[in-house]
Image (cartoon, rainbow, N blue to C red; front, side, top):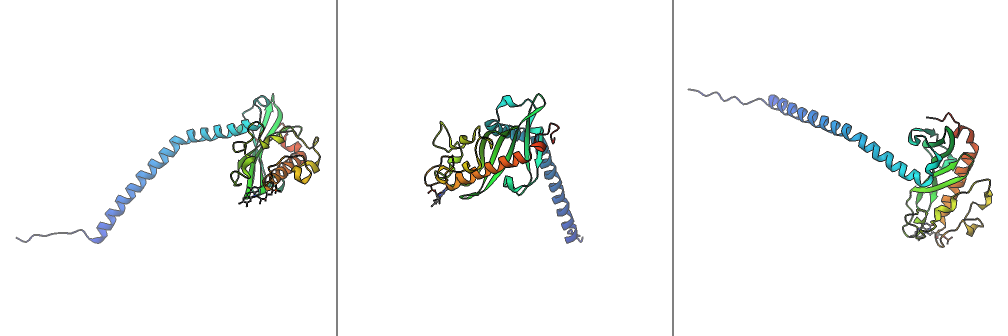
Length: 221
Ligand SMILES: Cc1cc2nc3c(=O)[nH]c(=O)nc-3n(C[C@H](O)[C@H](O)[C@H](O)COP(=O)(O)O)c2cc1C
């Protein structure tokens, strides 16, 4: 008796492999999508908490009773903010009245590039606080702009901005003392503070020039 041994053709083999691969791709993509959808609310909540933690360093809680993170406006790119892309600002309101604005500014000319800042200003133009959110300044030299790195824990360098405004500090004073201004700096590391002071000063002018739109009670929700 003659045995007929049929081997699948190459085309059939290729088809079978392709179908198996396709099943794997579909199953794993669906699994990934499910995990993403399942964890997204927790990730968003953690990001919001992180943002609020930083904002709370510059904005006193008693200044607002609104949901800050949803009361936001898009600021178009503006050289006065050092920004080449749009940024988000948050409007603090108390009893429906705009009380302060929290926004980002960039100092483009740090010793090692951009220094990103979070700034809070009251509706009358007074600085509530400034924090560095991102920088590449030299550890142990220029990084004293970040209060976590500043050796002066009692009165970190960045707190010199608290309470200042264009009304109380003349334009020529927005400099380090070495350049005849009012700001302290660490000897041997004045490039970094110069960049930060300049950026904050410019940002205050931006707020003054755009106050009406920025603090409009209708907001830019
Ligand atoms: C390796 C290196 C890293 C430096 N990093 C910084 C820095 O992060 N920030 C800064 O302001 N100056 C930094 N400097 C010093 C600046 O080049 C500059 O000398 C100094 O800021 C000027 O400060 P002064 O006016 O007090 O002399 C660094 C210098 C060197 C050699």
